[in-house]
Image (cartoon, rainbow, N blue to C red; front, side):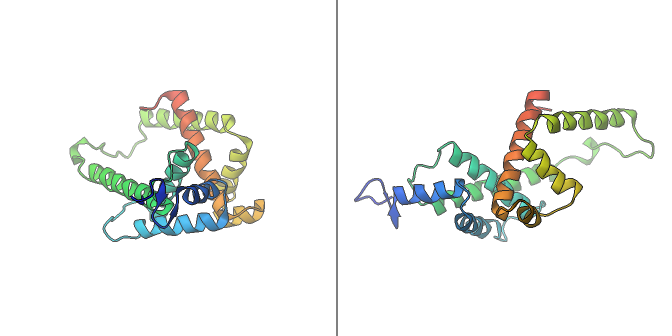
Amino acid sequence: MDKANPGVVAGGSAEVELRLAASYVAGDRDTYKLVDKWIHQVTGLSIWHFVDDVEDVAATIQLKLFTNLQNRRFRGESTFRTYVQRIARYTCIDQVRSQRVARDADAEDLPTPTAELDPEKSHEKAEEREIFLKIFRLISTDCQKLWRMIFSESLNYKEIGKHLGVPEGSVKRKVFECKKMAIELKERLIGPNR
């Protein structure tokens, strides 16, 4: 923030930064590519050592960013790039911490695999499938169509974009929205702690 002129971000005005954020939410392809580049500048750092694919981490960052922007959490007090990269850094830190917790699990606490199929596990899988089917029926038809293309037809985002006549970035954003809706539906069906 420029100290001489409150409300003016160094390198531009808060209004310019807010317009840039709004164009991202609106699905502007060039803005999406720019944001994707900023995110990869953070996720590409060698300090992270992710277990998960970097693209999965980047997808989580995109989802958090999109949700924050929809909820008007960005007020232009910094540059949009600074805001994006701050979310990326904190998400990367959370990811590394969660990996550390998983690594620190005591081997004795982990279940021992058996040759026979455990009836309890079989019941859990049947329950999970039932929950998935309920979520699939409740979610929007757009999300159902998208999931079919991803899981049944094994199409990637670029292919789906061509098929639907939309940019790849729009497909990614829609996948994030569908994932978020599915999580919310799951929490309503079975609660957040399960």
